[in-house]
Image (cartoon, rainbow, N blue to C red; front, side, top):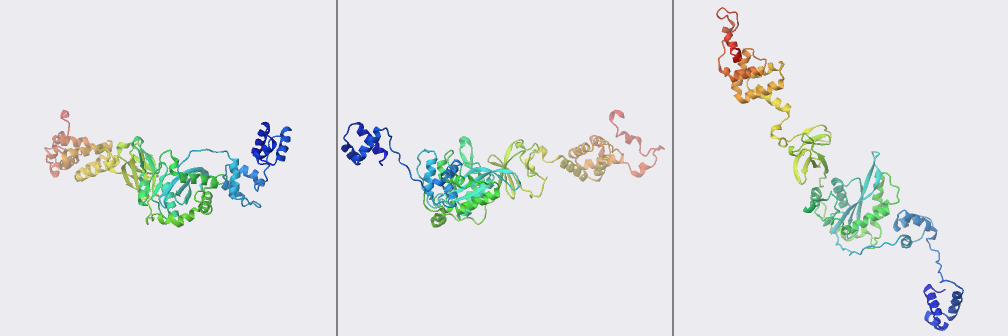
Length: 495
């Protein structure tokens, strides 16, 4: 049987009236073959169809097609089928069939980047789905991947958020898996690594920048909306999603995390890489691990970053405790860094408050920095009252006694203390003590207004009558004291 091309050549030459022997020479076939196809063409036969012989994958074609529809990759399909009895096809054979079943994709052409051993590690996250947590709730989970660009050795982890402590903790575990830190780390533009300030440009998140300095590596963020800047890790994200996650029945977070650790240990880092044709773990051991920077002996202190609203009283509520911030920031939403030992509050990039963090078992406590309060409100009302009472008692025994007598009157005691303290500030402790002595002597203890009149008229400096003489009758009168002395305490209009 001839192929379709020779058949079409013979058919065209016959239509042009070329002799049979000439056609046979041009087509490279026997003249009898030309005669046979001339008869078939005359009878209306079409070009020959070559029937393909059945392949090793013919019994598995339907199952492979079903897996392709589910989105599984060729490698993942081969890994699943090679455990089946009777399956002997190679990975390349499965790949060719899967390629025929998938639509043809076209894309742009990019330059291949080259990296020296230990030069760069690329970092990225990929969302995978919701998993069941130990508390019975489902949470969205993310796949963290950090890839060494030379060896393609990658560290994979499953996390529940992309906060700074989680991000830095995953990088630290990745460095431990590598056995060192690379010269550069290239993250995506997530907020845990890079902060955007509009036209002012980008700057690194403070903890991420300090973390890199602590490990002797340099941050080198990828350009925004340019995934080709970190193509190594982008490819590993897709590889992990397609080879480990897709089509699997992962339900519980702990089980999925353990399965991911097994997969990267038994499959991902020991496979023959499609580009290098080497196992990533072999390249890591041969040349890249020795080029990595040694890890510091002391671990970097991880912290939690959150946003908190400044309440009307000038405090932020953090884990059931209250910490003061400057009163000028009322109603603002501030960024708070929580470490094991301290709490730092930031207004944009400016640190506005620092407090020692209360122990985790303490709740309902208040931590105040008096410099955060306005001048007129450095102390709470209760503290101001206590200080006023202490100052009055410190003026002398008579002032203290008079203050005690005022507590049993109908007047509001807080108001009386405030007016009493105002007299102390205005006239001083000596005059106040003398005036209190005089008020007690004449039993004028029904209110601070009596004390005010004594001080306003300067009566506190007048000598008091002798107690014994005051007890005896004067001029035959039965009064204990002369009436003139009581008149001195009356208002001017009542004399």
